[in-house]
Length: 402
Image (tube, rainbow, N blue to C red; front, side, top):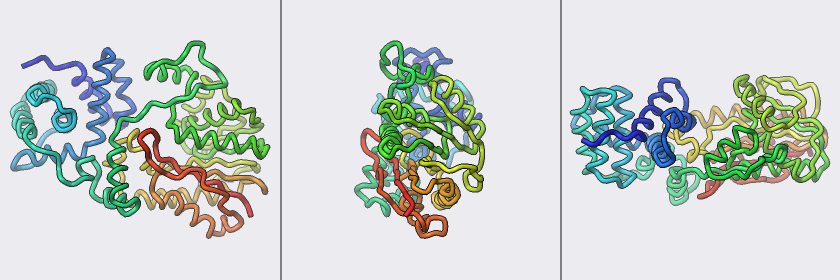
């Protein structure tokens, strides 16, 4: 048999590493590739394998479990190895003999006793077709496929699911606060520039929302900003970069998040990018008492992430319908509480990266009909949550006092 390729070994290492450390494979695969010393071609193939396995995991497991008369018993690592090879067979149009051969070797590299099982499954899979169910074929649980069909309509839901399986486009902006000394070239160049604080990697729809906040601050001459759900500071950096580029003066920029670990990352980004903050607050946005009023409040609300499945495919196999309703309640609690910190003639920007109506228009409707929101009205919808072939689906609404 042919020698097992480095790209496949590294892909399996990434999946096992992520599972054992409870992190997302798509977030650590580049780090693992660096550790494996892969060249550019093998690195791209490894990333493709990892993303494909995570995105289509439910489909791959369905095919693996139905390849034999009885559901096969296997370790998690053996299943990871089989997922890689089954993904190749079903989605990459690789020569079946090579994929099966490499798959058996991949399983043998971690569990030699499972080589026979791997051979039986992979030879069977090499002769089968994808499942008929459209949602399952794209790695979506049945309930989520039904939910999206109810939300978007059958044709739009199927387009959404297909687009969600595409490889994400790497989109970045130069950091105007600290311009790079040399041009940013290619994917790896953008990643390196991001680490150095010379570029900010973010989806175009996320960039558009941050730019809208900066433009509104300039248009209305507002000076003070509270950013809720600042996380690692991606939109923090974007807002300040866009503001600097158009001459919008942010006199006070405070950030709030409930994770000290994320705020530590924000501080690293602040140091690298050079943006200024007055206060970095770690606290619960649903009940924190804020001691001052702000001209602008930007809420980057915690959400299910259903608009970013192309970037975070693991969400598909982890989310439940209950998660949507639980998240919407949390978002409403945040909006009810932090709206108290808005100055009398200020604006609130409420944003998510979800397509779920319950998290978007539903939260806005509930807020405006509640006690805390009865003195507010919808100014305008900044962005509808729509997934395209080049952007994620982000939602943003602007609220003002009556």
